[in-house]
Amino acid sequence: MLNSLYIKNYRNLREFKINSLEQVNLITGKNNTGKSALLEAISIYASRGDISQIRQLLEDRGEDIRQSDSKNILASNVQSFSSMFTDRKIDFNNKNTISIGQPNNSVVMRFVKYQDEEIKGEQGSIIRRRKITSDEDERQGYIEYNIGFEIAFNNWSRLFSLDNMLYSGDGLFLRKKENFQFIQTKNINRKINEQLFDSIALTEKEEYVIKALKIIEPDTEKIAFRAGGEYSALRVPVVKLSSVSEVLPLQSMGDGINRILTIILALVNSGNGFLLIDEFENGLHYTVQEQLWKIIFELSESLNIQVFATTHSEDCISGFQNVLNNSENPLKGKGKLIRLDNVNGEIKPVEYSPSELKTASDHNIETR
Image (cartoon, rainbow, N blue to C red; front, side, top):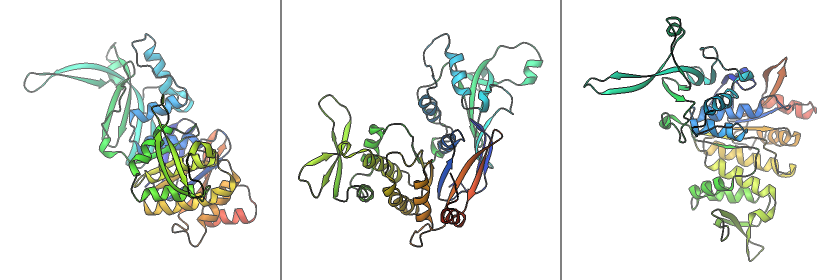
């Protein structure tokens, strides 16, 4: 679990620090104050800088990452990766680095210049490696170099050539990765939902899914995924209601219940890790949000999950506050609201403790 968070040079989070975090954290703020960037940064930290996760984030934002032998592949990929840096700055010194995490436990990313070199091994074999060039190397005379992207986590690092990006993940930090799920604002990824359901089918976690769906449809008895049609490779969610004899496709029951399915499947698959939700209120009527927060608090406690969610909604904040300060909440007091403000171009967090949030709510003080 993250007890605090420091982010340097990631998108509009130039120098950003949250002093303390709780098990359930709700992030609010005006447009362009870095709410989505904050979740992205946490996903990079949780993945330990996995190149597949980084590429997915870039592609989701419309950044073109090329894999072919196109003449423009290097320039295109440098431009894409530069979008992660504050002001899209491209530099090759140690000052222009992205850092995400906690002291002595951070993901660090930077552009580098490197050379391919060959050295002789102990038994005469040829070992090929990439050597990062220094300013001293360049001062000693003209050298040819390539441009790469280095990702480091603690004492481990990996250097990627930007003129030949890999399709697969690096695998370097695989054993160190945290479990996490990231629900973004775009349309529901039905393929991922299908996979997440398969991982918990016929376990007690399936009961948690049913309980969450009952927030909107109390007659829900069972859920399954069935073949979507003759020409579709996807399976679709269907439910059995106690009040209806037929099995019904969940997609026919509205955006709200499908949004809840996405959130609860991600939640029960985030054990001992992180759940990240961008724009929590999307598709959810204000009357169901407090009930969903109650389930999130309960399961984050029992499954040991740290939750980060963003919102623009006053109703979402109200529901969060009501559950957070409820004496029956197993995590009473173990949540907080964090508002992001843009102060002269710098993003600064304003942290609300449970008691401060309750006072703000009782006196109708704006916290968004």
